[in-house]
Every structure is written in structure tokens, then in C-alpha cells.
Image (cartoon, rainbow, N blue to C red; front, top):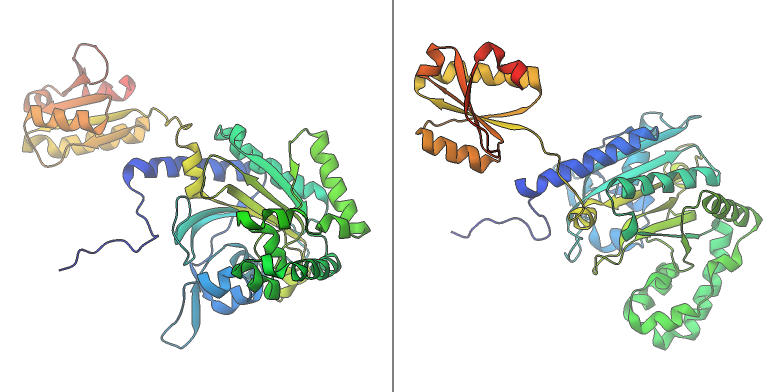
Length: 415
């Protein structure tokens, strides 16, 4: 019989790694809450139309990467490939946006059928932050400061760089698109097959191509910053001014366009050179027309998402796991099991420490070996003789201290 294995690109997160995930996710949630953002959770499955309408039918995600199938009722369903569309659907459905300001965050798995590589998988995890009902450049700065706080708390702010650009409004992009199409048509023979396809569907994505053979051509292409109207220019200038005043370093990258159709005005990425395959660890921007496009009232919106796999790769060498006190309870004999279980419960409740109870019996020697392997700092030993005297033996596993006896009723004060 063939061995059953995980689906390619969908990975297990094992116990020796999951503790890092737990720590990072907890920190991200804590920081977002500090800024006034509240958690929202939405389903893994949505109607396919949600993503084709929001992301854009000509994007790579919709054309090639979505996990889509028909259910028993004949409805087309899709595993969510990103969080923003679901967040807006939930907001419209439950009336969160009408004449309201909302600051939201989410965390969970997304799904895209693409070639797995380091830091990019078919089931991957994202942490996202979104703000609705705020229009000015100040909310752009808040979102960027929030991300910077993440990097500082994770001690990787020296490994990332903020890059920004603007896509202006719809009129800006129409004018720019015309110039871009004309430019690339004049150099059509130089384009690769992917860029020729994008020239017909989404020419802005050519500017973001990583093909080294196209870099000189892209470098000389028209830049969207030359086509901004007064309002778009004022917004971008206001963003840069505030960033300068608060001394948050940034680089203007005129080639930064983002991959989804719904983006407008400010777009940004936090990039790193530490991961070769994928250099963006956090990316986002404005999507002011998306709520109205999906049936709600016109609402300005901005947000970002970060891939947790890439983030874990960056922070693994920087994280110091908290040194939690772990106690291992050695139980010698069947008659002490019930008393030992109750003792462990009382220690957990009174002292907020981790207590591992030895299950399955065994000799003193074998149980102490398990205690050492568990990483516990202390072993508590309870046998028939100790129970008769209402005592427990304390044995230090990581320190050179003598073993001692403590009355059971005093053990809580001891810890």
C-alpha cells in the first residue's frame, strides 16, 4: 500500500516549530490590539464569484492558482486565496462599514495552487490588518508604523526595508496604462511570453517582472508618478512628508504596482534580502473602490498582509523562547495516581506553571529520564512513603541543588 503523505506544498508544523509560530502569532495579535484593531474571523470557503469580482478575472490568482470545485448543490466554491475579499464580504453582510470606522485584523491559512518554494506554499498562513472609513495619508502612516512595530518587537527591523509607490486614482491608471501599452508594444519583440500575455490583460504587472532580461527595458518604461493628478499627488506628498517628520525610513519604488486589480493610491512593501526566493515579507495598499464594487457603500480602505512562513524564516534566529517553568510529576505506584493528578491540578491552578504528569507507570529511573527529556526544570516525586507522610520530594534537574522534602500543603507557596 502506498504511504499516505501530505499534499505537495501543504506542510505540517511540528511541535519543535509550532512554539515559534505561537509566539509570533501572539505578538502580532497583541501589537494590532495596541493600535485599536479588533480580530475578525471568516470561513475558509467562499463562493467563487467573491474572488473573481474582487481580485480580478485576469490576475494570476484567479486564472491559475485558485482551488475551486463544485459542491453537491452545484455551487462553485473556492478555498480563500487571500483575506481582503472575505473581510469585505463579512463587513458588508454584517453592516460593519456603513458610516463607521473599522480597524480589523485576521490570521489564518490561505490557499493557492502555485509552485512551492522556500517561504511560499500552497497552504500558507497570513496575518492581515485592514482599516475602513479613513481616507487621508495619516492612516497610511499608522498602518506602516504598526508593521514597523512588528519588526521591532521581533528584532528584525534591520533586515527589512519599506518601499512605497502610488497608483493614483482610476483616471491616473487609465492614462498610464495607455502610455505603458504603447511603450511595450514598441518593444514587443523583447518581451517574454508572460509579459506578452499581461500586455493584453494587466500591463502594469509587466513593470513588476523579475525576468533579468527585461530589467533594462522596464527601467526605461514610463513611470506612474509622472501621470498623477492633483489629488493623488497631494496624498502621496502628504504621506512622504509625515514619514520624513517621524523619521520612518522608506524608498520610493516606481516599479511597485502590486498584483491585484483592486489596488489604488498608496501601495507599499516591506522587503528583505534575507530570503532569496521571495523578498517581500509584508505588502499592501489602498483599495478604496472595492467595498462599493462588492455591493456596499463607497468606503476608503487600506491594509496589508504578511506571509507567516517567510516571517518565521526571518525571525527564527532572533527569537528567544520564554523560559517557562516546567515541573514533571513522578508517580511511583498505582495508589498515588489519583492523589498525584489532583496535586498537579492544584499546582497549575495556584501557580500558573506547566505540570507534566508521568502517565504509563515505570521505575524511578525511567520516569526521571522522561522528566529530563521533557525539558522540565524540576521533578516532583510522589510515592507510597511520601504520600503516607503527606510530603513530596523535589529534585532539581537543571541546577546543582540538593533534593528536599516539602509538605504537600506547602508546595503551592514553594513555587
